[in-house]
View 1: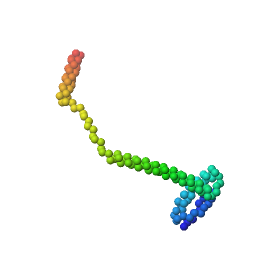
View 2: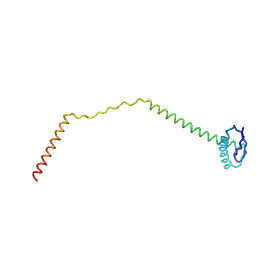
View 3: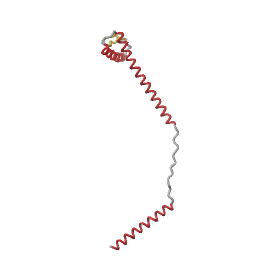
View 4: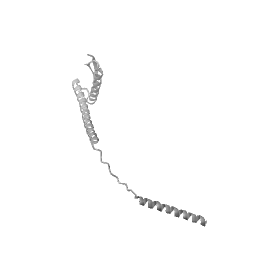
Length: 133
């Protein structure tokens, strides 16, 4: 079982760990050391046991905060997933019926006849105008 020397709060500790877990131990010790350093900067020199206790409690507090945030996000995700499922399971909306006005063919024929008469009158007027010039 490998033994790793870690520094926490300016003090060195020899800690044993499983083979291959040295990196995790050093990472955890780094987090604990950061908290211990913060404590020492704020309070000054502390007895070893008190420094480790306070640093551990500070890390535990941060961890609890992260767990609360994680739980909150998991609740939001579950709520969103439920909403998505509800939307996916809704029946398709009924198609809307739109009525479009249909112009009777008699009206279309009358308009076409009026347009033809107007064109004939315009042509007649143009002919008379040319003849007058």
